[in-house]
Structures are given as structure tokens and as C-alpha cells.
Picture 1 (tube, helix red, strand yellow):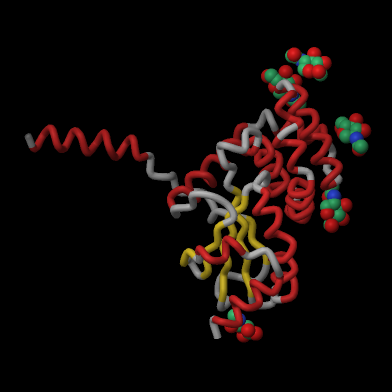
Picture 2 (tube, helix red, strand yellow; picture 1 turned 90 degrees about the vertical axis):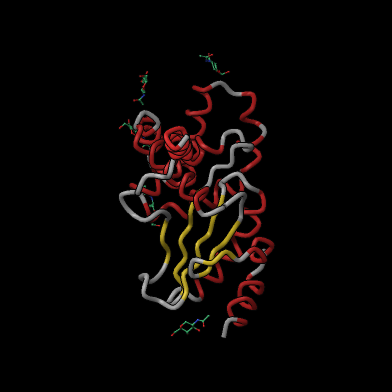
Length: 205
Ligand SMILES: *[C@@H]1O[C@H](CO)[C@@H](O)[C@H](O)[C@H]1NC(C)=O
Ligand SMILES: *[C@@H]1O[C@H](CO)[C@@H](O)[C@H](O)[C@H]1NC(C)=O
Ligand SMILES: *[C@@H]1O[C@H](CO)[C@@H](O)[C@H](O)[C@H]1NC(C)=O
Ligand SMILES: *[C@@H]1O[C@H](CO)[C@@H](O)[C@H](O)[C@H]1NC(C)=O
Ligand SMILES: *[C@@H]1O[C@H](CO)[C@@H](O)[C@H](O)[C@H]1NC(C)=O
């Protein structure tokens, strides 16, 4: 009996797939080092309309408070946004190699979501890659040839999977979701305005 249980728990552990330890902490960091008073972990999907609505107000709030507010953006490609994983792969390429241009990429995708949610449904794989590379160049200025090559580099794909696993391991079930100093703040998922963030952080004092 004990042996059976042991064997079963071994199977369970394997099938649970504990996320591997990433080579650096997950997410794209804005602002001061980790020793500051507040770190805001942001979980966004490039193709989520609520993430798109939330971003401008949040970004402005962060810009005005960046001397103390550390913001870490985690990308969570949601499976029901059909091409989100592809969009996130191009995003990961930019994040890794052109970090100064990642915010532009995020904004561009937030402003053109319907192209990858709807129009792209009629494209084949080649057209998808070509348009994504061209749009990435439009958004960031990074040569589309380099973006095309990045689709053949499995490291971006792999690192994005690790990000997805990381978010799942934190109980992130949708976007946008937020953690403040490591604690989930469900109410913040409804924030769309600068004032929402201001009221929230003021309330912590
Ligand atoms: C993909 O779609 C494009 C544009 O419609 C077309 O020119 C191309 O031949 C298609 N490629 C494949 C492999 O079907
Ligand atoms: C990336 O962003 C920087 C800073 O905004 C800008 O100077 C540069 O032209 C952009 N494009 C590339 C390809 O680096
Ligand atoms: C992008 O890179 C390719 C290959 O290196 C080059 O032929 C092309 O002119 C570049 N395009 C732009 C817009 O810089
Ligand atoms: C990517 O790989 C495919 C298949 O191996 C190849 O046909 C294509 O030319 C490669 N693209 C780039 C941009 O390296
Ligand atoms: C965090 O600390 C900075 C500087 O010490 C302060 O200006 C800011 O108001 C603090 N943030 C909050 C939400 O208390």
C-alpha cells in the first residue's frame, strides 16, 4: 500500500511540473532597485483589452512616482487570445535585446489588438510571422529581419513558457492582475485611471 502511495505521489509530482528556476527573476523592471518601499508586480497580456485600458493610467502614475515605485511587468499570454503567445515571443525578443523599446512595443500592441485578435485569424503561419515582424519594426524601429530570425530562436519561446509557468505558480488566472510587495490586490484589476492608483497608494500611508 505504502509503495503504491509512494509511486502515485511520484507521478503526481512529475505531472504537477513545478516551474524550473529561471536564470533571472521574472518580469521587465521599471524604476528603482528592490530595496525601495513598494514593488508593484503587473501581470498583463498583450492582447487583453483590460490590460490595454489599464496601461496608460498606470504608466503615467509610475512615471510620476518612479523615484520610489518599482514596477515589474510580467507577460502572461492567455490561451484564449489565440495569437497571444506569438505576439509575446516578438515582445520577449524586444524585451531581451532592446529593453529601451519594450514600452513602445507594449503600447503599440495595446493600440492594435484587433489586428492580432481578429484580422490574424485569416492568416497562415508565414503571413503571421511577416506581419508581426513588420509591426514590431513599426512599433520599435528594430529591423524586421532581426525579428523574423528571432522566431527561429527557441530561447524566446522557452523563456516565455517559463514566464507563463511563473504566473500560474502565483495563482494568476487572468489579466490584468497585480501584486503589491508580493501580495495579490484583486481590487486593482479594475483600476483604469491615474487617480485609482493615486488613491490606492495614498491609502497605504
Ligand atoms: C500564406 O498566405 C499568403 C497571403 O495570402 C500567400 O501568398 C502564401 O502563399 C500563403 N503561404 C502558404 C504556405 O500557404
Ligand atoms: C529604441 O528606443 C530608443 C530610445 O527611445 C531610440 O533612440 C531608438 O531609436 C529605438 N529603436 C532602436 C532600434 O533601438
Ligand atoms: C534590415 O536588415 C536587412 C538585412 O540586414 C537589410 O537588408 C535592410 O536594409 C534593413 N532594413 C532597414 C529598414 O534598415
Ligand atoms: C527559420 O527557419 C525556417 C525553417 O528551418 C527557414 O526556412 C527560415 O528561412 C528561417 N528564417 C530565418 C529568418 O532565419
Ligand atoms: C515611498 O517612499 C518615498 C520616499 O521615501 C515616498 O515619497 C513615497 O510616498 C512612499 N510611498 C508610499 C506609497 O508611501
